[in-house]
Image (tube, rainbow, N blue to C red; front, side, top):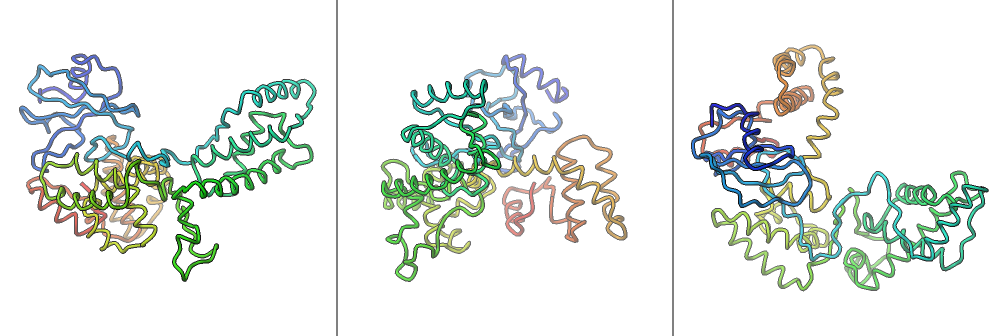
Length: 416
């Protein structure tokens, strides 16, 4: 098998198992605690080793009982395109948490479906508008239905939307239903934007009365006696957090969540227990967020209470739970998008910096491998910013996993 090229191996796997999707291969490295790493050459394979086949798409994990007839054992998983050293299935959050958001504000805001009678009148109004440019006169019931449905759709992404979000929603509304344009408005939807703002405030009040944790955290009853003012210490997302203050999974309480946290302190000391830890970390995400928002603990306090959080995989997963964006995949995608401009800026630098990055730029010009090019760009950028590139990326060939983890613990910026 090792005599085959990487392309031949991919072709053999696709033919044997009838796969047609774009695949990425990873191999199990025994020197690093049986973690999986991206396979760039078949020379890295060992006899009777294990290969992981990753479908580069956003479908649910594919579980196959197919057995390989070769000397390699193969496991199948799905991947959304994010790259990294270890790409096991990410358990984002408990499906029983009703307040979980799964994505950021979309580029194109989708207007929801209204009630049947409202849609019927809008369809007739749009037809008449295309013929005679006549605007539709709305009844109070129809207006209320439109504002309520759009406010609910906005809340799917943001509990506290900004002015630009309301503007986007209003523009999407008149784009889908041009009969709702407002004559005299400079953009045809300024009045809709203002109505949506008031409706969203009323909708938050209704949800607060129903006990929505994301909104109740700012009620006067939830604040300390020294902070019992409506505008003081308002806790809401400030950095695009999608799940800033989620509700507990159904049936869970503070006591049950604390019990799971204590169990995690024991589970983290057990070897080959990653799946159990991942499940418990996903289940306690809301509890962890409540603790961070309410108590504002220090990093050391978080390390003491949640040691399982401070691993590479859990940091990536926690970021995706919080932001609804894959950290590593997003970073790599943005790095690839801006690499050409970064390279132009770096090449324009003169003096001692140019001499230091000369070898790196030569390597960049000679390689086509995306991972090597990313490494070159990051190293060159580090030197360009006046930092030491030797501490950015290290290669470990004959070291044990404990030595690697010890070195990585000394600097948060090092990566394999």
